[in-house]
Length: 222
Image (cartoon, one colour):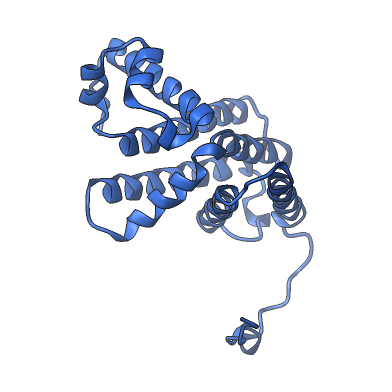
């Protein structure tokens, strides 16, 4: 669907989303208010509520805007011929940093993610966000590995889902951080995921087929 908003309206919405991201990052979701966002964005509360009916809606849209901005910067780089593993890792880092900057809001993000199984406007917005973010990831993978698509260990559409799930898992871990030591553990987990991505995103040797028997359920110790 084409965007029929005027340039002025688009700029206002972008200003609101940028202000919301800064305030959520500073104060967390519960500590932030729509009034604070309106004041920082330089708009009235009425105009803010016209565009965003709730803080939940605003948080989801702020994250969507962040993914779009990362994708735009990434697309500009690939259009200049900047392709391959290096740019892919840079984009991965940018996505992680945007989530880490919102770590104070992580508990609420996890709470919001749980609403996907319920009917309602927030669930529908989350579903739209999932689909769009995954599509943007897939498009980015297609562009950055344009000359090496046959060498990818998994196809772009599956890799996009895998990256999204990894980032969601890191959000869950961020939500449980209470100390700087806790945060250091999550940072290390990201570094390890990044290292695995760097080593195995491109197939360098033929991999053996999985043994179906090895995938059978194993009783957990707890």
